[in-house]
Image (cartoon, rainbow, N blue to C red; front, side):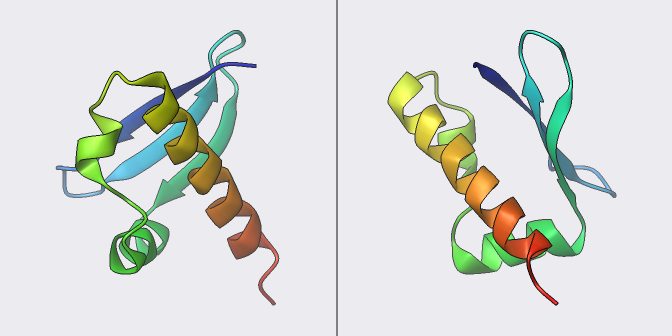
Length: 75
């Protein structure tokens, strides 16, 4: 499965989505408080989002999935 990172972080209501490249389905959608938390933890690196290196992007997508799942499990 391949993914596409769709992020618009320099707007009044920033967002970041991870899409399934084949179907266009949204796998992860983060905005507002969730993006702030990612930045505070140091897990959102704008340089890494802008790279074309597959290994770096794969790790970024992995971290976004882990963050999203962990956030969903909170009470």
